[in-house]
Length: 119
Image (cartoon, rainbow, N blue to C red; front, top):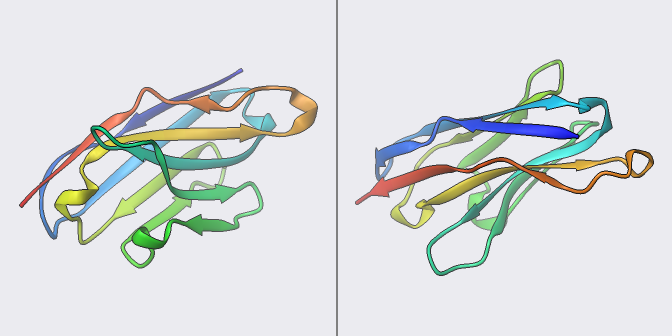
């Protein structure tokens, strides 16, 4: 199994920045990709950004240029640097991990961290 623990959320004014962290533990050797999703009240969960074990990144169009996903050298902690935050970025942000087929694990999710952007 894989355990994900997020940190770094909080309240920030529009135009400000926050950095989220997601630490993975357990069978991290099984992880093929990690990413961040978010869910605002009344809306579906959506992908924010992801990074593969090979370092390839992907961003949702609305986050390109403002958010940056990165990871540490051990590939067990993923970061989301969020700049130029807008009130519409307010949501619960969830860390997600995908695993290689041979491990036969489902996707794992963190508990979520609240990000609130005030206008």
